[in-house]
Length: 419
Image (cartoon, rainbow, N blue to C red):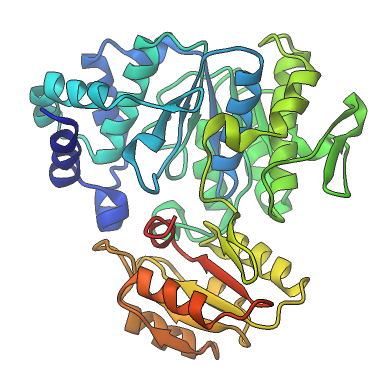
């Protein structure tokens, strides 16, 4: 089986959340466990760090991987979804999994796949564990896909668990209140294994405190780490770590603190041999070390063109606050969503004086552009419809003057057609 044939087999045969939504989400770990058992349980042979959260988990995962790489370790990094290339999901020291490994894996285990019938995500998780074990990585940084408790990645016993934050997203799967969502995220907290919590929030703290106490897991809030952010530099004052971050955006200081708190814990408890100088160096070149894309990515100037993965209440709020603090003449916003997302908490935050270019990604789960326009109009958001993301983007760029801002956000799958 060639690589294109293997990828097409996976896309065609296996249910994919990003294409069909909740129907692809299987609320148990049995298929992942069964698949990994047939592979020799590679996840039991890995030293992992496990990251969950509503927002920031991808950035924190890349920061942790970069820091470990800077120390000379071989570091596997698993994230999802991908933007352009399936292999973005599975990397070692910033290098994508080899095409021949993917095709060889599908060819060798095709009969087992057809027997167990895992989802696309379940199979991808099994592939990542198998690959990292075969390559004998020193450490593996594993990002959850959705939630935590029933996420396919949650069959590992990590060195450390990390929960970045909790906000409104995927309520159809995770629950209709922040405590319910927090409970799903808290599912990655394992008995006796320490956990770092990225953000204090009274309504979710109670959940994390209770679960950590029940499981006798040492819990640390990242906000206990003293941090200063001035003149484009971040400093963790207690350890005199100072660096110029290469990842920009209003949300990244919090993510850097969460990542630093995690590394500080691993270092101070002598779980992984680390030093603050290497951490500081790595935090200044995360994107270069890990090939991270899609988060607060500038692709043009005058007009400024910003691509960002903000798609839920918390992410959009921070994006809107940043835009409001800058003096752009006009904001041209290319935006599209998936159809199973509750948009009320998102649309109510968007600026009514922006020009909108409503569009939809080329996936079955995309919200039909005319429905998006109608919904947006009820929040006094005006704009034209474009069936093609590319056409919407081109139109926004052509219309924008030099002192304007073009923003592309709303769905990772919209970004994937531009990035």
